[in-house]
Amino acid sequence: MTARSRAAARQEARAGLLFCLPAALYVAMFSGLPMLAAAWLSLHDWNLLKAQRPFVGLANFAQLAADPFFRNAIGNSLLFAGLAAPLGVASALAVAVLVSQPLRGVGLFRTLFFVPAVSSPVAVSMVWIWVLLPEVGLINTVLSWLGATGSTDFLNDTRFALPALVALFAWIGLGPRMVIFLAGLQAIPKALQEAADLDGAGPWQRFRHVTLPLLLPTTLFVFVTTTIAAFQAFTPVYIMTRGGPRRTTDVVAYHIFKEAWQNFEIGLASAQTYVLFAIVAAAAAAQFWLMRRGLREESV
Amino acid sequence: MSGPSRSAASTWGRRAKAALLYGLLLAIAATTVTPFVWMAFTSLHPPLAPTPTLATLFAPAEWRFDNYARVLLLPELPVWRFALNSVLVTGGVVALQLALCSTAAYAFARLRFRGRDALFTAFVLTMMIPPQVLIVPLYMLVGSLGWLNSYVGLIVPYQYLSTAFGTFLLRQYFLSLPRSLDDAARIDGCGEWGIFRHVILPSSRPALATLAAFAFVWTWTDFYWPLLCTSTVTMRTLEVGLSVFKDAYGGANWPLQMAAAVCVLVPVLVVFLAMQRFFVRGVVMSGLKE
Image 1: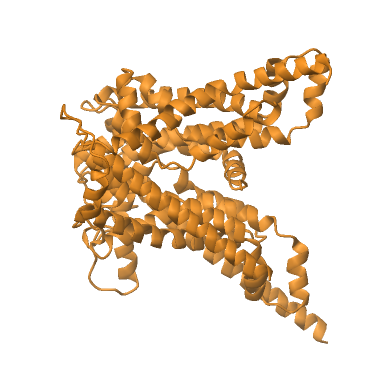
Image 2: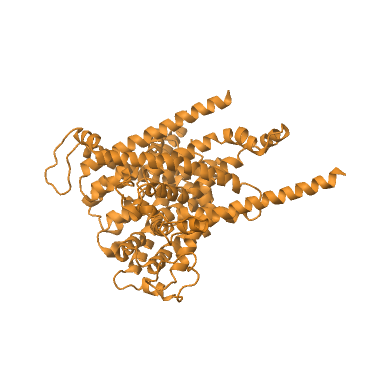
């Protein structure tokens, strides 16, 4: 290396550090530091209203393991994500296949399906209160048209409140998930579909044996991101149910909010956030592993 | 003889298929659009009217366009101040986000320096952290800096997670730009700043617009951080103001609540419709990560 090019390389390295310094400092300060601080807080009996903040080791985690309300919240979140992820992924895939058909005006429908995702979550949650109202709500109205008698107060019924929030979750995120599937569908070579056609495969067989295997990486990505989002759903719970009725919609994200900002138990709340982190990471890892195995089996 | 009849049958088959597909599209569109239609028409019913049903929605006792004037000029809530706060905070976040992400993305995409790949990996990993983990310490940090209930506090720590996403998005785009552009500018005597400023940024308008569009929608509709960070009513944003408004009316006054909801929704829908293709591009680019 000549002296000149070495000088140029040094200059480039210095420029590189200078260019990423602002963002690196920013991320270190507002993501890295808080993440470490949350771990440190989780080891303390830390209440915002108390002067004494003793170190308690893993006592917060032990307390959570025995706390029936926190276990209830974990169960609710697992149920929520367990319903919301498959529903969100399957509905988005079905809609993506539908809007990938060469139909006139299909672009308008894609736009309409995207609108809930960019709308204000508070406004959307307020309208969904109406959708789910007894008697005058949209769903009860449609059910009565179909001949159902009686009406259901979905948000105040312990059987229906959580599934109703799941439906809202799938509805809000439909557009972005659909667009990701659409990109995956468009990347599938036409020749493969035509070859399957020549072999006499019907539309369902073509979808099952050509489209679906090739979409597996896309599906994995959507599944993981949808699962992570499902564990973090907060605003609809805050606006529509406040965790009720009888704690059936008290999901972990909302439980943490109350622990931190109503009870001011931020040591305990920080421990809860790390439990949530661990569950989300485990769920994502499990999905990667399952899909990898699926990919291997398909390729055999 | 079978030729024409078969083609007639397949024409009918195609038409039946198209009708079925349009029927499905319309049914799904009905589920995504009906709530918004109800919102728009309910906002024109007389205040405190009985909850509009699908039957009474289009025939209110009287059309009340003055609901909007009432909501916007409400004596007990400073709605214009909420709107001003939303505009200032969103504008600040978009500007800061573009500045931070574009410079870092340039370094990661174009410059060689020791530790670059490790640093980039660290950036990407921060996208996995649930926001709940960060929010309590972030609140304490912002408090100890004296930024609670201020514009600085609303704007600066906002992108605690999306900075990594934005950097990732722009890096992908910068990588796709031909190197010959940089080399030509370098021969003309441009330094790295000159190349970034006069070559990379002007060629990256679509990617920058994508990031700006996302930052706009996320910030405009964010609820959690402004709810925590603000303590006086004059510092609330529209999204938090809407929830205060809902609580004040306790769910009883649908027409005024929906007029308020429409006021919060319209700006973000206008931005979405104007910048639609950038949203689609951003979603697709974020889906490409491995």
